[in-house]
Length: 244
Image (cartoon, rainbow, N blue to C red; front, side, top):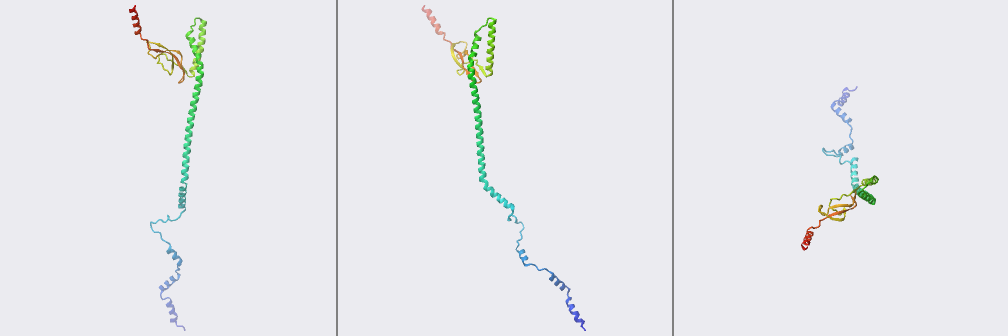
């Protein structure tokens, strides 16, 4: 017969302390940590507060900015050369424009001068015809109806010729009563005068003309001179009377 006390004793020893059984169970179920994991975790530095670690990291944006700055610094001499070339071409263009404008103005003035010269030479050849019409008008005095009819006919031709000259810019000089001007007048006669001061144009013998602001023909004029002294003639007459 089995002794019951011996059977129950080991059972009682196995489960005599429940706390120890629980602690043993937890120790058996707790997973073991990898030694390598603990070493890596310990070697990883912990970022301190307030320290920016992003600047030390090589990002694509930082690399692109660095490359852009290097490219800009290397292109600066080429940009400066292009700017100088553009400035030179601009100055050259401005000089060409100024030269062309001066050439255009000079050509226009030369053209106008040539036109005036040709026009003046042509009109100068026609002025003697005008002079003949004026002489005829001043000298001829029609008496009969036939003479009056002839006078009116050539006067109409003369008027038409004068109107054509006016349209071309021809204007006659009117020097009578004005001071003699050697740049406009040509003195062919001198006449003593008490009525007009010396150097005054008394009469226009051959009419002068302007073509615009140019002198087409100088006027031939009679100019007043100082009156001759009368005292000498009176003294001579008095001496002659006493001698007689």
